[in-house]
Image (spheres, one colour):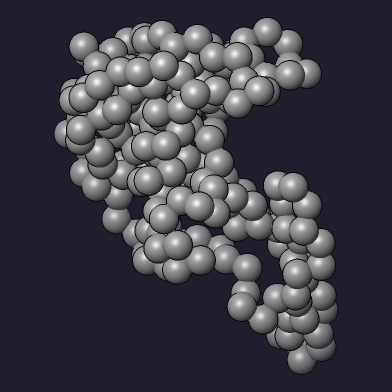
Length: 198
């Protein structure tokens, strides 16, 4: 899949060996020559990228009250989820996730951020901005999802992401915190990084 990732992204080397493949994580290791000429085994994880959508309608951001099995109560999140092997691109996956979780289709899409939450995992979290609501239909939820669609002001979302109350939004705090207002988000440029095929 073609991706645009941060310039400083850390990737699993092509020479790495796949040691274990789980449901979510793949574990890799490789022999790395050190500065003194000796060799050590280095390790890194890889997982599916997490797609996030900031969908804006009527001046508010669409958010989910999302409850998962084994978790205490619902949490506020942005629509999104894991990139699937069947997705031809991040954008296709983001549109699929938004439609499944909210039943909404939007006309305009722009990639505004891509983060690598931790350098020891090849895992990226692209954030798309979606505007101009096109249509609404029924949600298509998985058996393990209980989701209520609602909306909130960008200011409230920004405060929530920067607080400790919603850990599922915390990794977006840096991205959301870059913007002072919804207007700044709506005028954010397309994300610019390095292109890879993984």
